Amino acid sequence: MTEPDPIVGDHRPVPPGLPQGTASKPPEGRPSGSSSWWQTPAGQLILAWEQAQFDRLLADIFGFHAVQLGVPQWPALRANRMPLHLVVSQPCLQDPPSLQGPASLQGPSSLEDPPSLQGPAALTVGDFQSLPFASSSLDLVVAPHVLELGADPRQTLREIERVLRPEGRLVLTGFNPVSLWGAQHLMGRTPAGLQRSPWISLPRLKDWYALLGLECLPAHHGVYRPHLAEAKWLERTRFLERAGDRWWPICGAVYLTVAVKRVQAIRTVGPDFRRSRLRAHPAAVGARRQSEPARDPALQCTFQDSPVDPHRPG
Image (cartoon, rainbow, N blue to C red; front, top):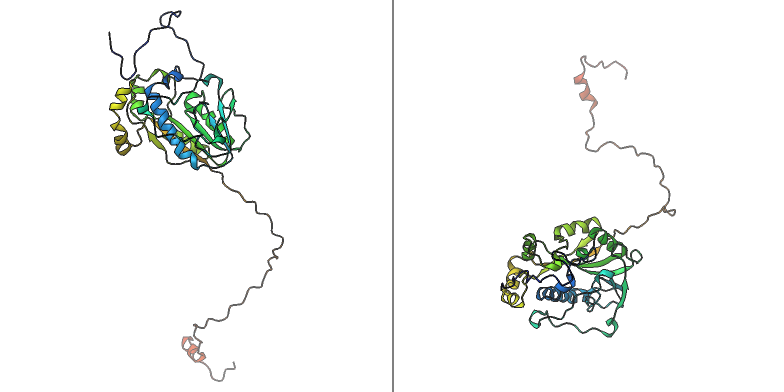
């Protein structure tokens, strides 16, 4: 009996009722097996790190309307203090991940939900490419791995920029292709839940931000250990977290970006009727320069060819 691969895991047989070489296909635009992968130790490690970052960053973002896109049962907005919270999800993504996992892989102690934030309102849309919100109406949009789950990530990003009001913030997370996980992805050893997910690099995402007028603040990276299927191997590589944060900080498995929508303020300047008309003044005649010496009539005779006649008039 062969042992399971510590990276990909064991290959389970095809369920009964399906012929060999076939499997049930997930809906279009959704990674295959995404809900089951988030329950694995590696998925729980990603969730614990991202939830800790959300709790730290969203607590100091103020406004009135905060929206979370995707994973409706993931409490990404639990630390935010805005009065109105709304979770928007898609029909094909109704089975979100859970934060219940091994105690050794959990992040720091979570904050208790205030009474006003328990049970935020939920809304289901067809896709994130056409959100049912007015333009410039939201103060905060949290998008955990939304670009990786959508069919057109650029259109999704355009729609998020449309609904954000000036100085509104977008908090987005994604998988980093420049990491140990990205190397495993290139070698074809990607876990089953992430095979169809497009991995968008951070420089490319910053280019999209610049085209849409979004200012990207310094990004955060985390989870420097490789993707391993078993919890004991993740525990043995815990030392890579501290080493990676110091020696290769941009090579974390996931990144988190905070983008601010910048709009140039324009002030209309009309005609000022109270201003008096400019009057044309005559040009002043310049006086003789004081430094110019006066000419002596007696010296002018030396420049003439003939002597001066004293009897000549004038």
